[in-house]
Amino acid sequence: MRAVITRVLSASVTIDGKEVAAIDKGFLVLLGVHKDDTRDQAIKMADKICGLRVFEDENGKMNINPKDAGAKLLIVSQFTLYADCSSRRPGFTDAARPEISEPLYELVVAECRNRGFEVGTGEFGADMKVASVNDGPVTIVLDV
Image 1 (cartoon, one colour):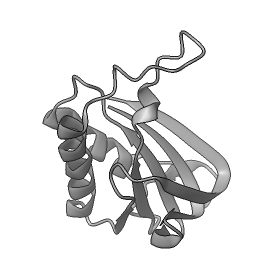
Image 2: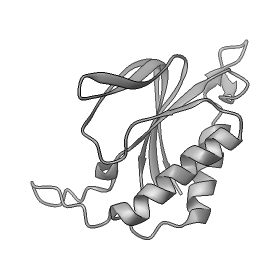
Image 3: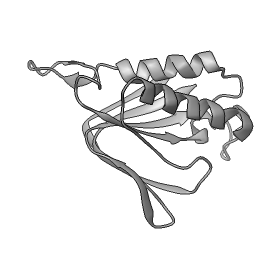
Image 4: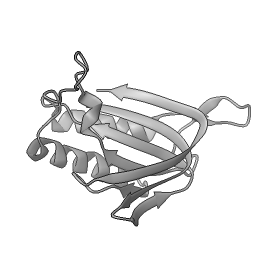
């Protein structure tokens, strides 16, 4: 499982011209599911997202986790994170099929909510427009 996590001042998802989710301060999480991923990896990913200490403390050091920073999460499914770009046309054979990836994506969302976070989402499989205002910029890639 792979996540690209951006610390944001704001982020939103729009589908067919309608905003379906928006957050202010928090994380925009683009989440990719590998064809071999498991429930255990989804739970581990949620734990890593929720514990990532990249908000600044009183000394300007990245030392505060999102919960203590009062952050929200916006999690968007992103199968293209597993693109094979060995040729000019990317292949996606390493990305999980929807029947595998959607339940694991939903599990990550549920686990983050269970940890007390307000979580916005996109719509699995939809053509989404994602907007964000990066903070820092701080962008982290996590693989579990």
